[in-house]
Length: 74
Image (tube, rainbow, N blue to C red; front, side, top):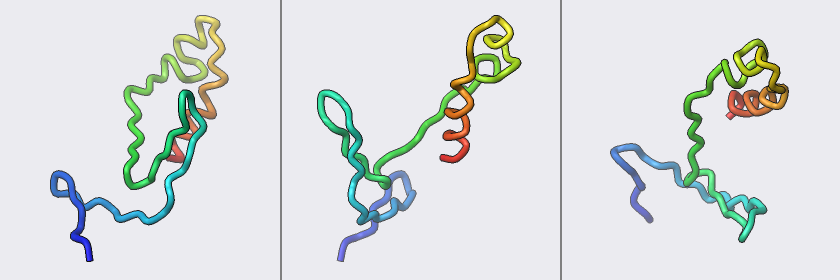
């Protein structure tokens, strides 16, 4: 029997699922859900939204929609 693992007083989930392997260079990345965090910093409407500063300045921001949708889903 193993003791629960915690960091800074927060119990970490014990995850016995295998790591996902993501293709990357120079070598593939093995990522386990219980050891991975998603950090989203400073999403700005001016740079990532239709009608924002970059859009109004003529830049194509159409590719930001799917990225934002994935962030919301995460």
